[in-house]
Image (cartoon, rainbow, N blue to C red; front, top):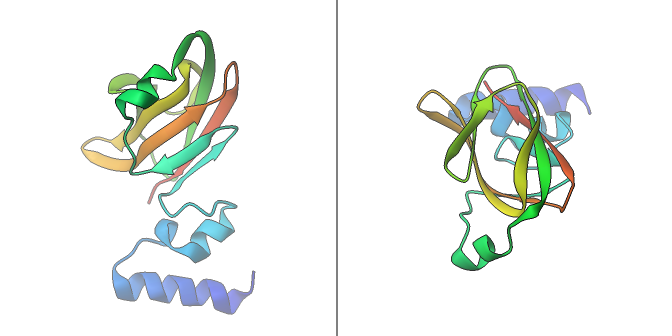
Amino acid sequence: MSRSLLVFGLVLGLCTGATLAHTPVAAAMFGCDDASGLCADGGTWAADTKMTDKDRKKQSESSPGSVSLEIEGGRGSLFVNGRYAGTAPLDGISVPSGPNDIQVRDGAQVLASGMLTVPKGGNVSLTVRHD
């Protein structure tokens, strides 16, 4: 990545009031193209999406997956389907396979929110960029 592109991203973020972690330039720097600031390795992430009743029926407790969470540049807590799962860093938290409502918070501030689809018996690593 060129230095001028990085500088442009920083200036753009400062001028617009956006944070660096939420600019496309920063997303590319961190190897993640999701503007939500959350990267999911091993699962499917849809930011700002909620589960439907149809999604809930797709969940499976019989072959759960696991989720690990790391927060870069800060701290936070993971909530899965509205329930507190723990404070980062987390490793191998058991979650139902299929779609799950995920929210990562630092106190009252929501760092990331959306729907994470966990494969049956799969492991998903989440990384959140926090300013």
